[in-house]
Image (cartoon, rainbow, N blue to C red):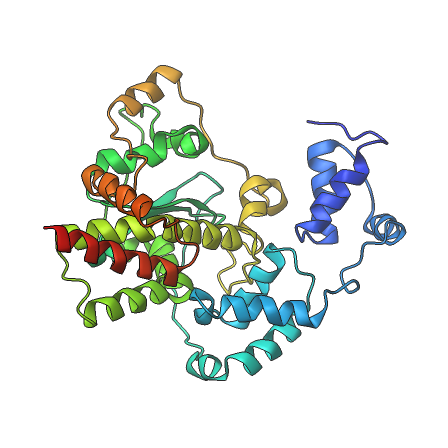
Length: 370
């Protein structure tokens, strides 16, 4: 446990305040992690003295309008005002949620009218704590165009552990690479430790998607907030006769769009992990920010179920994995596309529409030379 000194407590308070923790959470974190006891009342006095406030210092409305206008050009057109608000906060904008709702209603009235609330009768779900169980699955809505998405979510905190786009998601050894790399190995080690023959706990569970509800729900969310934009964009290319579903078209599209899709997946996961999950009628399911629930389970009356694993066991698993290539498509097509880009003095695309233009240019150049 770390100890907070007189010279360091300010930066901890500033940091936890900036990421949106409540006053109660800030005092709990300081007490549990740094042995620094402070009352909420005193915390508010400190924040006030440092000029920090939840309801002051909002950014200019023009900045908010510009940000939302830019987001609406791409997959942001799928966002409701709550998710757009979380995205604004993640990008450093101090704004009111009501302002986001009004701006979104003004800039995208058609999108607002199309989004309707839907109620589901949810099954009761229970996970004992972070790293008790991870839900993994592949998402194939973009697979017809050559993009396979695989991800994992923690059952307790609902934190996205990994979210990757690649050319395939069918090889379990390739999926294992996401588990065995250092940044995620600690989360999955519970499933790698040897299990006693008399143990009632399985290290790996496999079943129908209906039982994998955590990740299945999140796939629907991913489509609503991100993937639907790319599905529509690629469908337009196909319907206009510029995509036939063959190997070459898929490889060129992967070359043009894989990086942008991965960037957007990373951004979506980051915003999700820092947004606030609202309370549920299921009292066994905690509410709050996924990052906080995952890192500080003590605040929710539980513990981290991470289990240690020997390095040799982890290395044995890594030896059985197949690692992703550092290039987005077939090596020969990748080399050819780079040559054509250099000859035409083209640069890598910075947005989806530039990527589509690059795809069409490369497709035309390659097919003309065949």
